[in-house]
Image 1 (spheres, rainbow, N blue to C red):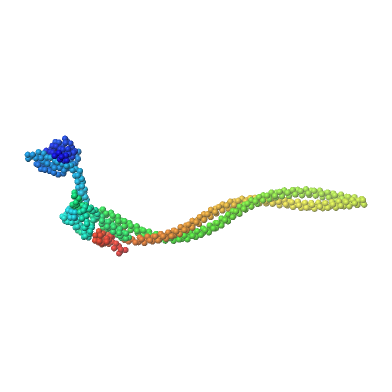
Image 2: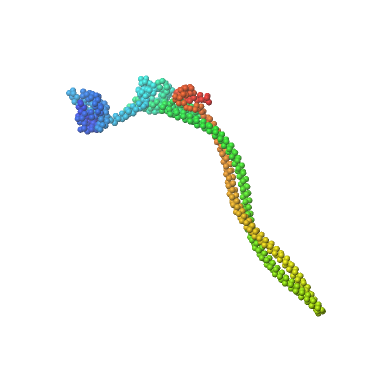
Length: 582
């Protein structure tokens, strides 16, 4: 008994529930000390509402009458803490009367919470998913409402039946299905998307897990399947996949008219809207491509014209450059000649200045000659006077000699000689005087002419100075002109190079324009591969077009889902109809 008390929580009550005693294990389980509970009522371990219930009253009444009770009980420990006890209430009978009730318990709070949590999770899964249970060989044990609603059965219609009632004949005949249940029976877990059949024969797609449940010996005793109906998703993906497959074949004469489940309806709208925008973009690309082809041709023609004109301009610039080069050489030579002229004029100016000085000196010399001539004239006058006097004296001497007769004949001869000399001196003086007079006149004329020459030379000097200044300006201008022409020549050469480069670039631009035109034509050809939808709008559920029915809308009577199930290729949005229309 002591060993039993060491492992179990034990408490004893009176038949009215008053606590008589409790061991240490029980006190630990409820969190109270022994003194805190002795004499208190069992009610302290239950919720107030439960303590006031008829069931609680009947519970102690049965114990008081000697009935045994066993089970799992939720109790309230100290500070309101919930605990779970697996216990037995054992009435102790003496003399045919119950004298007390002994409760032997085990604290199962942790395991109970885990169990409740697991149950809660399972309940949540059962509310959210379709759940069905099978034997290890595939016979149906039970199923929840979600599963029954999804497949269209009642529970009585499937219990005891085999899983095969949900599968297609082709799948049942496959090796995959032949191995399916043996693998589950060996404990293998399956998680995949499965195609199954409803009661009415229609297909349903489910995302499911097959979970083998094992006993404590590791043997599978049942299989629990958790499933979610994903038919809406699969149908949506199939239709969008078929649409994308057609789109990959350059066919956009498609719209998805049948509504999807709410979860995926936005995909249908997005798909249709994307197609509409894509078609609009293609039409715009086609339009722009045609215009691009036309403009590329124009650009190519313009480039050819520009290239031709650039070549002409380059030739003209080359000629201009050559002419400028010649002009530059000419101007350079002119500048050199102007500099030489400037030098010569400077020398001429110097010579003119020197000539003026020489003329001035000449005038002075002639002046002195004139003065000398005047002095000579005076001297000649004296000589002439002397000759006259001498002639008179000779005449008188001759007269006297004649008077003297023979004695005076010699003197008369001398007198005659003197007279002749005097006459010759007078004649020579007269000639010299005439010559001097003529020379004086010539000297005066020479003085006048030399003076005029001096004035002319002064004017020439002034003109030479003016010419020198002008030639200096011309020389400076010629140098500046030469420099400017060199710069212009360099600029023209640069312009010629740029024109040649431009011509090359224009030629390249022409080639590019031709390439663009070819690319635009190719792009137009590529775009025209797309089969455009003649409808400029997208049908929505409830629209007038959708109310006309599938046949009027121009696509197959079967949905994609039905076509896939029957092995027929799906059709969307009336390709057949639109091909004939196209």
